[in-house]
Length: 239
Image (cartoon, rainbow, N blue to C red; front, top):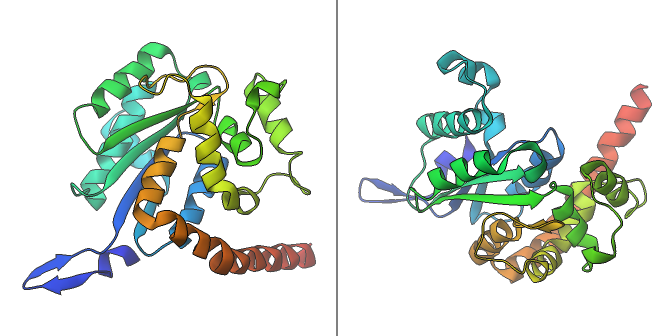
């Protein structure tokens, strides 16, 4: 991976000049595609989506137990065995309330408490609540309650539907909106229509700075959008 080549030598030791965010998402494409954009945000961070690094086959080879907590934890542990995780790096579990029992979520949260750089951030009921806060502040006005409701609602926020490149420019607004909506910040379990993903957002901004993020939005993001437009044009032409 490119990040392993970056840094500078101090005597024999290779000193890294970035922080790694390893992110375990349980969703299909939406969550991984969202976080992969952050690979381009700043050279002060590197982002790994664990599902891209550790396949299901690798996990099945060490365990046939697909109970939710064990499956997620085994994948994270396998990732660390393959890639390493220094004390300066962070491991984040980004998960949805609707797929887990409270007991299962507490099991993972308790495991994270054993390691200072392991974190769990939950959305209730799903990741789309976090996406909602990119575009609107008062989620109490939303009539959505289920994951399908929120997926349908956020698809109406932008012409052409949801795309991470349309939402990530509002990343800092999402942090502020989601944090303001969380009236129980000390508890890891969010209430209805609350997302704790802002905690991961704050951790990223603390490293890259708001100014660094603004530079990404003004300079790099337009290039990424152009690439997506060109990709869509070529795909349409092939059809």
